Image (cartoon, rainbow, N blue to C red):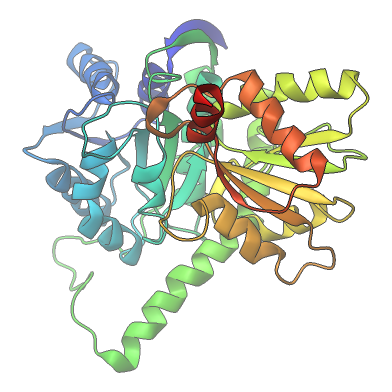
Length: 392
């Protein structure tokens, strides 16, 4: 194990190096660019034996990965915001072809107007494309999750592509100490990819070709079944990683001080770090609050969530994006998961940090106070409501 001071972007790069990715597809977009720039240095220096493909667009970047995966290669690419949207067609191709691609996504606001701040709208708008989705809180978690993502994506019971996301600038360009595992340790955890359903010279094979209505639904059901199996495979992957590296990432829904809580706030990404400090302050005041980090969004951790709220009166969900429906996308999923729960706590949707605006401890405290007050459930645009109160 080596300690390095890394940005979230470089944590992605080092993870791709340790995973011995064989094909890297690169197209720049702020704030993702330094990921593929650093990987280019690894390839140029000979540290990483890989084919580095510079393409003309994000659409082509993912097409290269889909094609290389179809030949049995381990692949990596990265993107952000508009670039991820341009990939939309190929996102479906990747999951439909069961291509075990790992992609780093730096969560950034979608234009217009142009904005490079942290926002989850880019990945949330792709949540139904058949990709597993992880949302990281720290640079250490970024590196560890990318390594776990390869093991998960290539597992014979899964074989699905995986996004590992990080908040723009809060992680992508901020440095912190990161424990980087030794290559031999990673090799023990992540062996070479097992070829499956790949093209080979001299062997007649079809991948992604035409099928009619009588069989198409079977393919879609297969993707859905593989996504469900992630629930069983991920805990085993994480246990193996813990045994080798000594770090436990906490599963799909890590919790903090939820024992005996009257209210729980669900957060994603870097906002979790801020909220954890607020929980400590409120607990010191004798207020029964807890925190849950939604680390895996696809597949959504329904069972873990239902177990968490068994004795909870109210739950709040913080989203960095909006669905133009009744509430934020994570809140919508939480609401659906709790529909059949034995205990259905009142749910409040909080929208905050959109477009990269800071979410302060003061704002998080106000969210908890809203829940503790028993105020009728609603959707709160926290940033805007705070401005209105300040102006009033």
